[in-house]
Length: 231
Image (tube, rainbow, N blue to C red; front, top):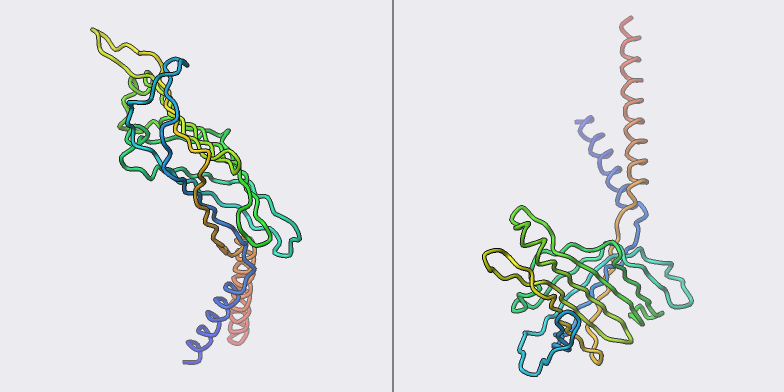
C-alpha cells in the first residue's frame, strides 16, 4: 500500500509539473474569401468576351500559423505566414478542384492592431497540380495547370486559373493556353484569429529526463543499500 501511495504521488507530481510548463503561444489565422465573379478570360494572353460566360464564382480559404508576439506590445504587430494551407470552398467550381501543390515562393504577411484585429494583409499563393498515384502523367504534363491566388487588404481578392486544354486528333494535341481570372476588388473576406498554446517541448523533455535520472538514482541507491545489508 505504501508503494502504491508513493507512486501515485510521484505521477501526480510529474503531471503537475508538465502542465505548469511554460507554453508557446501561437496564432491560427484563417481568411475566407467572398465568392469571386469572373473578371476576365484570355487565350494566349488575348482578352476574350465574358458577357455570355457563366462559370460559378469560386471562393477559397487560406490558413496559417505564426508565433504570437509579446502581449505588452505598444504598436501594431506584423506576422509572417508559416505553413500556408489553401482550400477551395466552392464545390461547384470544379475547374479548380484538383490536388494542388503549393509553390515555395508563396508567402503571407499580416498586421494586427492593439485590439487584436487584422489591420492589413498581403497573401500570395502559387500552386500547380499535385502528382498523385492516380495522376495520368501525360495529362499532367500537357495540361500544365496553374492556380495563383492573391489577397490584399487594399486591392481585394483574385484567383487566376491558367491551363492548356487537350484535343485528340490521331494523337493528343495541346491547344492554346487559357486563363480565367476571378476577382472582387471591392469586397473583402472574413478573418478569424485563434490562440493556440503548446507546451515547450524542450523544457518538457529536460524535465522528464531529469525525473528519470532521479528515479534511477534512488532505485540504484536502494539496491546498493539492500546489497550491503546482506553482505
